[in-house]
Length: 141
Image 1 (cartoon, rainbow, N blue to C red):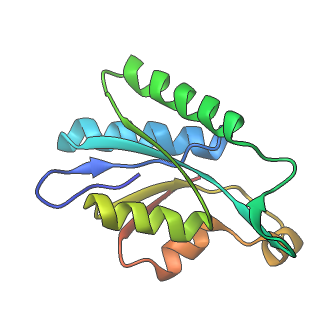
Image 2: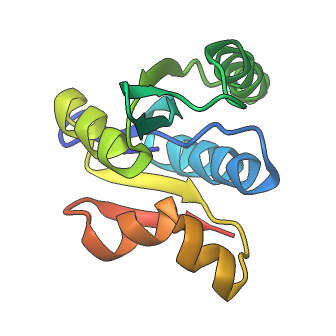
């Protein structure tokens, strides 16, 4: 989730899990407090194999679209009409690119509690954004 300069905006991640849901609730609270426009982004991660970038075999656009719809409904019940955005690529990079493109300045993301091995093997989008992003990052855990 992100808030934009001039016209505030909140943009939570929407991967359907509890951390994403906490990010949605946090975004809704911030949006109501600041009268921010809310956007939800779902990034379909790409796998870079021999044939070039492709969607992971266990991931698909339909799942991400359903998660976006669910996030939109959840926010609508709170009186917030979000922008629903689905993109493909590296999740952290795409969240920043969309925030830059759309003029946002704050990102709200959910963070899972991963063990050391999982963090080493898969990394953490929330951690990457919190450590490297030029945007203000709120991590909902």
